[in-house]
Image (cartoon, rainbow, N blue to C red; front, side, top):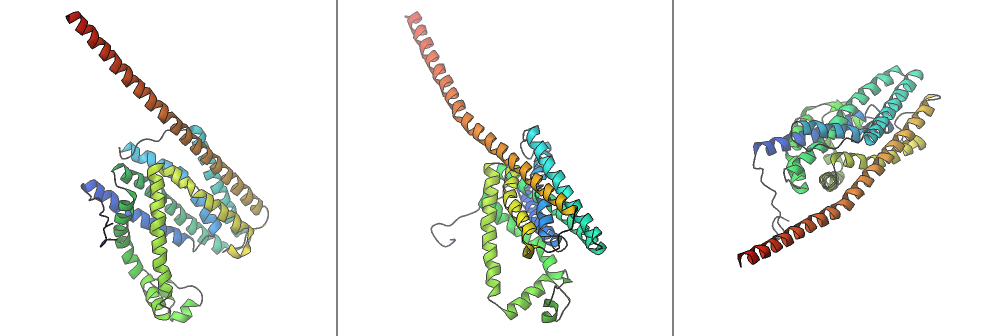
Length: 325
């Protein structure tokens, strides 16, 4: 829309703090996605999602940490909500431990070690994701709207990922190694080979970029409207649904489920985790409704005070006039 009457010009970054925040924001965003994708090579989708369901608590802690250095307003500590988030995190830990112990009990020790690496990378991705949402809130406080946030974020994220995509060599999975004639390749080399084999496939890559842009606009709009921790929780519903699907449907599993008693522990941890974060969501919605109900009453009280003040000033002026007469 640049060459149309509806041209949009992003807000200019006026201070070095805004530039620094955007650069850090873009790098953290890129790290979140890169580490998450890396972890999926070593752990199942269910383990990945159950760890990432801890995002509300880590985001809440990130908000409070940024508030300590005056970058974001303090979020009130409601112990019921914090207790529910802690229960959800404990269940995620129990789920992960049961999955690791189940893999070792089946005799696949190498799988257990690989899974441990995947869990570590997923936790790092979780921390980057929570900081990403918290920084989105900080940028909202600097009056940078969601369109500017997403547009500016893309530049440092791309620069940060370019060297990794161009130079980092990784194992090519399955029959792709035979097709490409190489066992290790960089992302850039893979893209070139895919372009040579089927140019139409690249259209899906660009289309995913459009959907990603729209998704980020929606996500950061919720961050600015509600809060980073509330946004983090909103993503837990699709995680919960996908966790259940991976446990129920064999074709969605990367690794086989462990036997008894680990599978019972996994099911129990998943159910309690989802129940805890669902109740947390209910409390968040209830608090939002109460806040919205109080807002009109406060405005009415303020208007009444103003009218009382005006009437008292008017009556006092009349008395002064009578005394003067």
